[in-house]
Every structure is written in C-alpha cells, then in structure tokens.
Image (cartoon, rainbow, N blue to C red; front, side, top):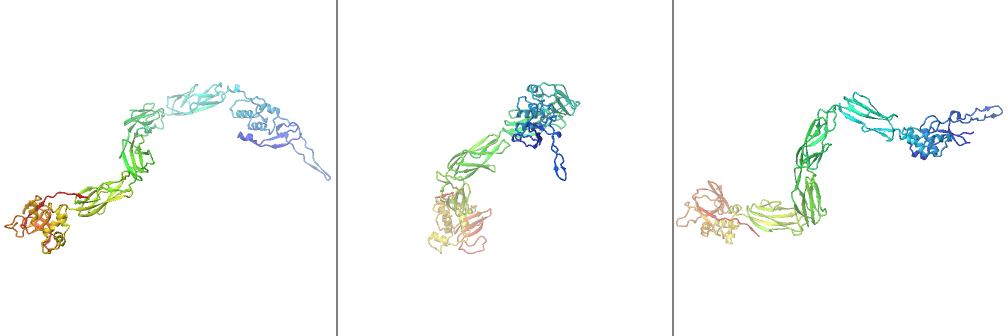
Length: 636
C-alpha cells in the first residue's frame, strides 16, 4: 500500500465562512481513497543504502497497514479524543471534495442525523465548541430543554441602605427547564434571596450572580450609597422665551444615592417641566421649578418667561429700483434678539440681516412683504412697493427771494411711475443759505445768492436759485460800509450829480434793496426830513421826537443847530439822515452816507458810507421815523 503526504489550502467555501484553518497533514490510501490522519506509525521511513566495491543496492521500502483509532466522540473527525476546530476543517474539506472522510468518520460527523455530511453538520460542531448547544449529536427536543443563555434586567444598579430591588432573569431558550441559584459577593453590602430580591445593607459594592444548573450565569453590580443629604440644580435663575426650552439637571453629593428626582412647576401655564427636568416656556410671568429627591430634599430654579414681541419702524415702504433701506426693529419682553428675515417675492425685494437691521434691496417693480420673525414665532411685516428709478426730478421752486432769517421748505417730486426714497440737498454757499440735507428746509442767513441742489440716490438732480434780502435797513446799510456816493447818486438821479448831498439818497437806496418798496413804506426821496414827513402823512410809519430811545432799523434825522428843530419849519425838517444799526442804554450807532467822521472820529472824508456813534441824549438828534415793517417772502 503506497501512501502520499500532501498539504491542502482552504477552499473558497471555507473562506466565505471566515474560519481560520490550520494546515493539516493527511495520508491517502490508494486502494480505498479514504483519508486518515497521519500518525507516527503511519510515517514511511527509508532504509540506508548499502555500498560494495562492485555494486550498490537499496533496501526496499516497507510499510505496515494503517490502523485508525476508533472514533467514540461525535464531531471528533480526526479521532484525537477532542472536538476542536481541526475537526470542523476536516468536515468542511469533505464537503468541498478536497478529501473524503472514512465511513466511520462520516458516521460520527453526521451530527444532525440527516444522513449526508453538510454545512449544517459543520455549523453544529462549531456551536458545540462554542457552548451554544450542549451535546452532539444534535437533539432539537433535548436542546430546547437546556438553558443556553441567561440575562438580567439590569447589569448595574445603585441603592441606598435599606432599599430593595428585584432582579429578573430571562433564560434562553424559553422552553428550557432550569433552577436558578442567586448569590452575592458581599452580603454585608447587598444581599439577595432565592427570588432575586436584593436588599441594600451598607455602603460598598457587591456582585450579584445568578446561574443555572448547567453553569450558565449572569451578573449585576450593586453599588450602595447613603440617602441624599442635599440636592442642587445647574441653574438658580433662568430666562426663557415662549416655546424655548432648558434642561434642568439635579445633582447630589458624590457619596449619596441620587434615586428618582421629581420635578414640579408652580404654574404650568407659565413654564412646564417634564419628568426629566426639561423646562418649556409657555406664557408671560415667573415660576419656580422644584426638584425633590426620594427622601424629600429640594432645590428650586426661578424661571422668567417672556412672550416677546417685535415691531418694525415702518409698515409700508416705497423704493425705486436698485435702492436699499434698513428696516429697524423694536424687540421687547424677550431674551432673544435673533431675528429671521423673509421676503414674499425676492424678484421684487430681498432682505438680509446686518447690524440689527433688515437691509431691504429693491430688485424689480412690484410689491413684496418683508417679515421679521422672532424665535418664539411672533412677527411683524412691512409692505414694500418698488417703482422705477427716477430719470428726472423737480423742485417746488426754481428760484426765490428770501429775507434774512426766513425759511422755506423745498419739496422734491418725480414722475408718478418713479420713486426715490433716498435723496439729499446741498447749498452752494452755507453762509448765505443753509439747507437741511434730508428735509430740504432752507434758511436765509446773509445777503447774497446761493443755489440749492437736490440729488436722488441714482444721480438725478434739480436746483433752486435763492436771492437773500434783508428785512432790516440796518443789514443793508451795514453791507455798504466804505462805498462812495457814485452808485447811489447814479441810481437816484440817473447821473452822478456830484453837487447834491447824498445822505437821503443812500437811505432810499438801502430801502429799495429790501423787500420793502420805497413807494410803500419808505418814501423815494433825497430830502432828509421827507422820510418822516411823507411816511407819517401816509400812515406808513410813526415819528418819535429826540429824547426817545430808537430801535434798530429806525431812520434817524439831525439838526445841526443843536436845538432839535428849526424855528419856522415843521418838526420833520432836518439837516442830515442815517440808519440806526445798534442801540444801547447810552449810545446810538448809525450808518450814514455823506458822513463827516466815522465811529472813531478819525476821518473827515465825507465821500464814503461810515459808522457814527452818538450819545442817546445828543441834542443834535431831531427824531426817529419808524416804518411799519412787515415780513415778506417773495418767490417766483
């Protein structure tokens, strides 16, 4: 009988089962094609060659018949007296036709009693090795009565001294017949009776073990701690919005058993709390959430809930295309300032948050609703209407005359199908005319001319030319200081008229350069006394004798004879005339044409407009003519 020794590898079938198979040596009997494990007695040993001087001979190989030890254990394919993974490998190779088991081997490896060797037999042998089934050959009815697994309802618990707890064991299969044995590793800490009832005795740790008759077991770790001496919460005071939540957490000292914590709210309509301490804001107000341990220790958290509201600074808004506007919010009764911005039509207008505002950008002609939403769901909205950007713009006045100190409200307008939310005003000379950048209110400040311009956001513009006049003669007179007589004489006579005194002509010119017509309040004259004489006669003003206190803007007359008048002449007759520009309790300051000296009395040049000063009781003063000044605003 010739024997061959060979090594085999796993087949694809064995690899699919993910089983690591060691290399095993087998011998094949060519006469029977049966495979038996090799043994020392089955090894072939060659004889040593014999050499002579003339020939060399080799002893023939001799083998004894192979004898296989009888198999007495089911699943023991290699007859080594143990059931191991080596036996599983032989069975799998037999199934994969890599070798053939002997009839005896097949008999003891047919552990499912189904006749043929199949993968079920290989699996059953592995389950036996893994203690999943209790014996081979497999007997389903018998296995159904044997416990294979035991589980407890808890693997670790914490109790306080004197507390009880029931461990419940679940055995697989459910048809198994068994008796449970309970034991404690430290009965002085926690003891257990035959029914799994645990009694905590003192602080410490114990292992409770439950086992079946066949040695299947399971364990539970029992930690025994003392009852809580106090309880604390993770927050003592919190603020919530409606529908906002907060997780309240209770803790006890480390050496104490926490046990069940009961959470309660003093008013569920304001804030509710579930069994796990999760608080939810419900309504406006303040409540106390109390946590209570099983032995009566308590701790509280004050919860203030705000309903929260939001209001936008505008309910409607009109923009031109490609224009932007920052909607402002007023948020009250809420701890959250997070606002979500929404647009009903982003083809008309978009909105995005920036610096606490909702920046609206107009995109196309139409209407969109911009909505601001708080986390609690409260909202406010603004209706945005978008029109075309203006291609032109106009003002309610193109030019006007204003008296110093007076104002006028310039208004901008655009075509009906256009709009500009943002526009601004500028003045070419703020010293003459000031203008409010955003309202268009102009104020006349000094005599002169300035141009006010309005610009829209897209560059369209319009202008208004403003000529500023003075209501007071004093303002006009003051502006003429240093001028000679030529322009006044030419204005009055139409030529220079160098031989004529020009003090009255100067006053007439000043009056003509105010909104007051010289033909209405101040006579058009070249006589010093004619202003009062004609003005009083026509009811245009009043006369005040010397010795009275004048006002700024009065026309003052003088009699150089220092008598206050001339005998034989009417009371208005005078030698000289000027305009009062300042009055104190002691002095009068005037501006005069054809004056002989200025305020400092250091010039005798009578060819210029000068300031002069008089004591209030100067006997050269004849009197004062006071026109009935009326404010006037002229524009065209």
